[in-house]
Length: 259
Image (tube, rainbow, N blue to C red; front, side, top):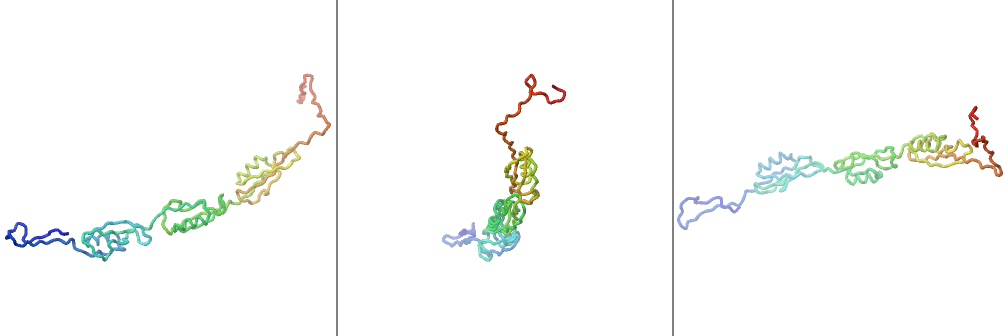
């Protein structure tokens, strides 16, 4: 622009003093129409722009509707006039925008679904028994942080609560053995005592609630009633019989044939 591109007479020619020299000054590159390349594959679009005399600057841009590798638009737009050799910005689709799945494990079902829907994801709840409280999400697929796109489905596994199992028979076991067996089956144990009249029932489970074989959810409590034997008191006014001794002062041997 504003540069002399031609003169008349030409350089080196003789001219009389005072004669006129004609100069041709450039007014810049010619203008041309930017070709419309929207919805074309990038390679095809670049070829059309180059043929029209433009240089392209390519920028990737996420788009949910335009296929990856296809031109979204240009600046200047197709149909506008621009100087030949000028640069045209070309926005090409990099595909659907991806983002990490939020972590919803540990949330209740309604909160988990809201968190996913806020990200334009589709929650798919599946119920399954587990040791987690009923209504709590304890698994998700895809895992938290996995890249997904808006509209993708996320399966959330919601706890139905612990499974029901048969209550073991603890009657006749010692307190410790009964507690261990019930806890191994997934139950809590509440130990209560009952008076026992037979020394053999001391620290032995005499009864339980619920009864053995009852279906009960894991994590519930089983009550066991443990016998406690207390020896009867010695009658008042009586003296225990003395233990017989040998002349040496030691109790006699109870083994036959030994004095």
